[in-house]
Image 1 (tube, rainbow, N blue to C red):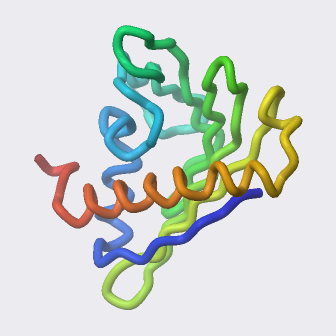
Image 2 (image 1 turned 90 degrees about the vertical axis):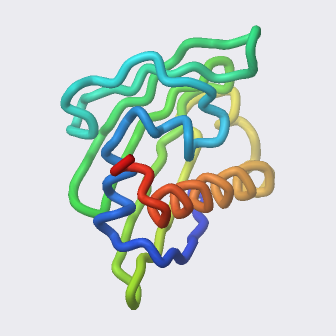
Length: 146
């Protein structure tokens, strides 16, 4: 498991409003370049975000599936061909006047699963930190209510 944390002045409710709006997914997830569709019951278990990865004109269509969703916790299976599938867990906890965000990720399938954990951590941690930074900025600035 590769995990990072981030403190934000946004409340857990503000952060959850971003996480529960599937159309904002590509705004905070590094690597997701656009959203093609979001199931109407997102982020309920089994619902999907249909997204693309890459840079135009080389875009690959893929999806992310919600495996578990409850207040302050979102667990996803993120598909990213050709890299494979990753399990992603996002936790939001109250911390003072704001929130502590935690994001964990581990490769579920090859080829990334074959890479040693230390090498995965070195490659993935900066991306996860940027994801949480973007998530915090969106929540702090009211993106979900725009």
